[in-house]
Image 1 (tube, rainbow, N blue to C red):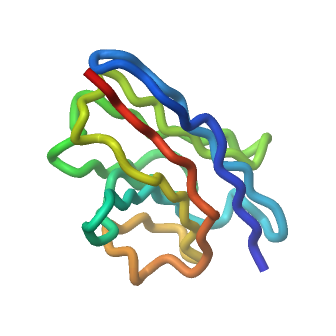
Image 2: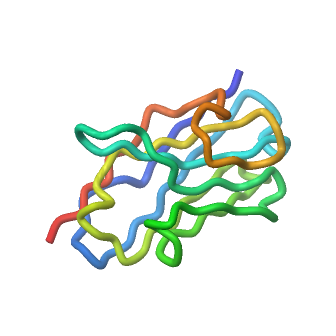
Length: 124
């Protein structure tokens, strides 16, 4: 079993920044890929970013490329999502997810464990 707990969400003005964290426990964090997904009101869950077990490979949705950065600290069992230049359309519940394989993907169906989510609200 893998337990994931997100933190760092909140209310921010457009153009501002937030850093989300996801703390993992239960199994060897350094052996699996991680992803961030989000779900806005009335919409389906969408891919945001993912990172391989080593951190060497990262993937981003086009909508966040150049603004968001995913990273991980395997010594701390934590994955991060640095979000800069936030826009109102980034408003959503953000979820981290773990995939019990080393390679990262962009498909939510490839991820077996999910956190409870953290709300990000961007206002003008």
